[in-house]
Figure (cartoon, one colour):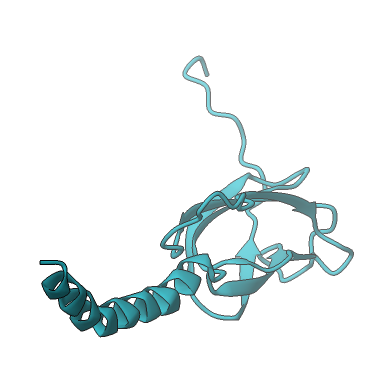
Length: 137
């Protein structure tokens, strides 16, 4: 009576081995790090003069990672530009990022960028401040 069941298990063994092997190949792909980008942001005036000490805030809006599986992924960075008006950020996941730039004496800038390359330079030109509008004048 049990001889028939033993024969069935042996027939299932190659299928089970193949299934386990395929799952073993697929699982590391879920843990793999998403593609990363090294981002360089250049902040200038409209006359191409660098703006130093401008505050650069980057927020990760949308990415390409399939599953995080409990990993804490950093989604917010803050830095300042150097004397050449350049802000360098550590490698970040590819996808959509929101960049906001604040500098004393200039209008605040904000825009969403799609980042898909390994290295990318974004040039941002800040407007001078405009006079205040008032309905009472």
